[in-house]
Length: 440
Image 1 (cartoon, rainbow, N blue to C red):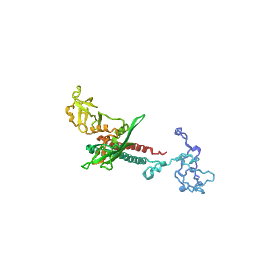
Image 2 (tube, rainbow, N blue to C red):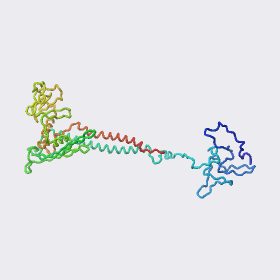
Image 3 (cartoon, helix red, strand yellow):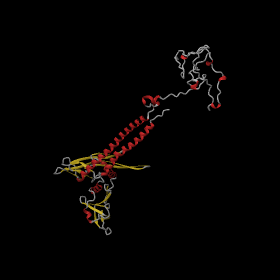
């Protein structure tokens, strides 16, 4: 065997400079790699004669040896040399590439393998580990749930708001048509019940009210074919006719009207108060608030005189209860239908004049509302407006509505969906973050 195939002696080893030693310590001793032969732990060098050149056709010069034939109940294809070198679990990487000596063994127990993540290679998208959802999927789920919330919330609140809007609209129409209807006293067999309640806690007090009514009108037919209703006794054998009208207002989450008048809840506070405290009677002068102009009118049933008192210079002096002086006003007008004086200071300080008597600054319903306050303290004398062509259609004088009453149903339709959108946006943002499970 030639010398070039023999390992070098200790004397032939190169001296290593101390400076060439890395800071982490000395590496295991290595042997130079010869081009014809490699020290492979699993391949056995063939025995060659002194002048024989080895055939390199069967050698594998790759970085790792290929071991085949290792199957159950089969012998490995690598032969064990007769000198009794024990087999290894996995061939060590050659010295120049892996930094291990031929005598060191590499096993699965003492090695950490960093396998590549092939999840990003599938169909060009990321497949999260351990069943977690991607950010896009989280956002889609959050958007779907948010859409359901918006649909339900908007439908619910829009339905409630639209229902209330319809009630106010129909009541406004009834109120306009009833402007010229006659007034009648209801039959004493009618029934009206009402109540107010108040509950308080640390945050304050809240009030609620309800009423229900069964109003009966006794009417007769006049020569023109219309009805004349009012006081009288119903007799089945006579020409009189009884009309029964039912209505009410209840408070369940919101005030809800029912019965034969579109928006009976407009009268709930007045009627609930009158019929909870039937022993309370109102007397003149009576104050009536005009919501449309934010002005209060005071109604007298006696008389008002221009400069009636010596101190009331360029003012109206008003009296009540048989001639007792009450106070002075800048403006007063007379309502001929009811015989009332309607006075106010809300029109300014320089409007006073003796000609105010024939003025028409007060809304037409101020006088009739004052009349209702006096008459409707109980069943006896309770008055309503009725349709002379169909007395089953009536209008309660306490059930007036104004244009601003549309504001509540409009807000009821608009604000809740806006709040729902805001809540859904917050939920959507949370869902995009909260549903994601981080992979380890």
